Image (cartoon, rainbow, N blue to C red):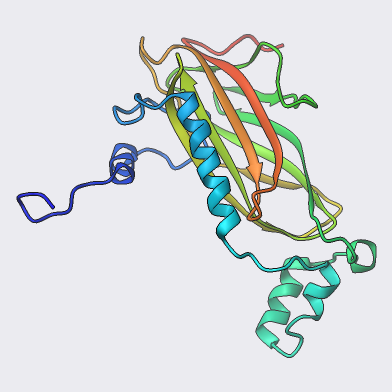
Length: 237
């Protein structure tokens, strides 16, 4: 408690104030804040371990097949309608016996009005060789995901992204994508538009790690990559 009677700010409060007024996006990069420059990649690994530990302590309840989901609460009209809306035209006979959902990230793209879309190839091992892409400083862009869900409902699918520059963490983002039912057609999700930082200190090389996880902390894709921010976009291939 400070002298003025107000509670001292926590680290989370400082981060919120630092980000005030910035676009809320699942961004790949954001201007570094004073509070973030003291965090290293090793410390972020510790944060990952803490998240895993918390997830283990949360009682999520037993997993159910899709058929069991449909049969549950059959006498609750509101729940039945919600399930029908969520599942749509799912062929329950084809996927109804599977416990584990399967999520496959099909494509990633960077969209900007300044240029044509940058399609990012996803390597099998999640480690793009060399520089994955280049962003123009001060440019507006958004990130687009295309993914397929099969076998069962995936609950609380989220995207996390952490960025470092010269071994210092400059951004850590978590974006909730939602809950999705299995279907033949892929889903497409576009994150809100963001703006890359600009200036001499913003330009340079960055390393980053992106993950796609669900409520059970199952990781469907992890990508470790590097990218540049320069005065202009890289020439189109």
